[in-house]
Image (cartoon, rainbow, N blue to C red; front, side, top):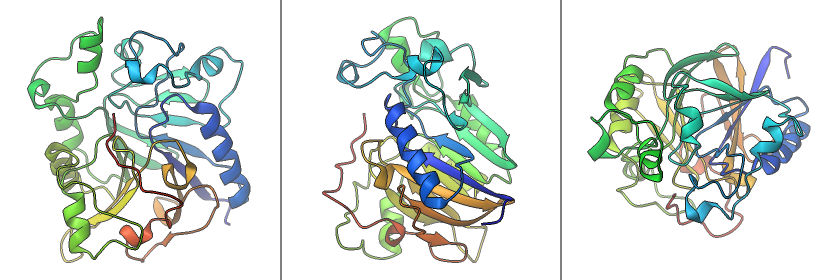
Length: 302
């Protein structure tokens, strides 16, 4: 592998499981025979210091909250991680950094919406999910459980900020764009062991955003299942390839690695085996997903 190449790992909803993800990325680096240069997390990272933090949903407080060890220097992130917010985060801490901040060494919050150049790649991002009732409302400081929940919804000015972007290599969003199952069905039947999720999954705002910005790739999470589809038409504008990542319960479908040379992605794969599942010039769709190792997740998200 040429030394000028870049190995980027996308990670699905971590939900506080930082140590597990660290071990997975060690395994990926060993399998690929090189370090992972950059990690991109698609929201619901949950960088809480305490598992029983009252701002966490009750269903989450039994899950690990391992971030304190990284923030306190007990453990160190081995490679730089940049994340967007999902709808379950420590929004009280993130509120005063709408344009991003560093929470610990090698741990960076990208911000609510915008563009960052990372290792030569143009990375656009939109945090949160769509809630029509709050879309036009101003963002309030998250002082209570209710306002913390509202902080997990993106607002119109943030969407407009991202809609103005062009020439984007990767777009990170938390919630799926609407219409991915329909598009996948148009491109062929699911392979054995795969089913299509509900046609109502995702939101129309993010779909319009993707069709306006035309990023080369989109990474998303939230719905806790892997999915792969191509948007756009080869006869029109450049294609946009979408990779939806499962939550970080198992690595096979929650880790999606990408190798770049310059700003061009040359190959990619799922999980931590290092096996290539896509190369530049090949089609991208459901058959680019790994063979399921067990029952498909229901894909509800929370």
